[in-house]
Length: 623
Image (cartoon, rainbow, N blue to C red; front, side, top):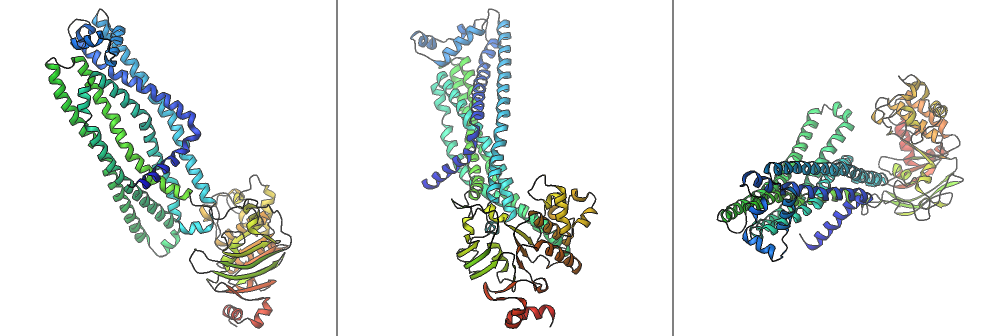
């Protein structure tokens, strides 16, 4: 890995853990608990040697039997040795004239030490559960909010299932990595330092022999971690594929069934989950290798220490049996934090792989946002102007709209017709700034819409489309979307004007009936009338109808046309329609072709002079 790449990874990791900053006080409590855990854990291990020597040595006091000549000499010379100092303090506290009494005190102390160790471990888990869940909630909240503020062009770039996977699966994987790392980076280094200090104070020669394993293990774990980062990224990409297939299949289940494609979709899903399985298997095979590998190397070294040190103890050289027992107990204990710390790099690489996918979304700039001094506009007074507007969806793509010039007066009914792909929907989508224009300007009351706050701009408009979006909520809440505690009388009045009140009243729970995801429990005409009721309740001065009746039968179209007439009264209206019958009475009609306005006028004027309009008219009415 290059130095530049390493610097990027470090910045990315610190960016991720910056989400822990609001919980510094909680982390401080966890740090204190970790400190006491290390102390009590060390004591519980250290007490093994006094316990064994009490049970199995002859009937001298522990101090007398363990102080070999070299140790006495060191003590007499005044050279501080942590091992000797601890032994003296512990022996002074625990040793009794009767070995039974000594054993009783030792057993009681070990019981207390283990109890306190586990109590602090529980405290760590309890506090960290709060921190980790808030951490993951904060990231999810930021990710969701950032996605919501993105323009429509963003959603054409990312599949829905992919975004869902980043909010759910990626954040879960990131949480696991951070959770594991936090304990390792605080507790394990502290344990290693204390254990290593004790080992050196007992025998620096044996410690030097045992330390051979550390650099070897470190190199191997680093290599494994680098490969893990790549494999973790592939795992998250494959689970995103799985989520995408699920989302697309469930959303399009009517098409799946209409074409009897259950077997096809099932096979596609099985292949997608198989790819995910293979990616996970490769990742976990490598991830699980680091633990056994470091432990095997560690045990090999410890066996060597046992053999070498055991011979010296048996021959009466280097250190006493009590010290050797302490050394071996601590050496075995130090392997666990070393193994966990060895896996730290692996967890970091997993966190970087998943974190990068999340940060990439968070770092995607919101292409359409309020300008620094954007104004609030609460009403519409005179007109809408499109002035030399050009637009393309992609930076280097073809122009979709070219030199669009329009003047729409207040309360005017303005219709847009043209063939598929002419740019009709694109043109009206520019008015609420769903997309940003490339050139020119769109003005409301002579104010560039880019100088208005987005929220106030969009409050001026109501939009009714062919593809009605309803939510899995009650009828009333769908009509009063985003407006809590709205008077039921107003909701019912809006439904009546939309010709929806009658069928709503016949539903099992009336206005409190749940309508299912995307309103699937309703017919197309019923969904459309609820969306019109929503627009009526919003009461905007500007209305946009995008082929609102194109997919309905004649009866549903008649009811909705009546509802639209009710809604259009005293409002400025932009209508896109394939059916010319719905727009013939418009004040002005423009004919759009290949992104250009080729003619405009009333229905009668266009019948007289527009070849393209005449063609569309004759095509529909078979004149």
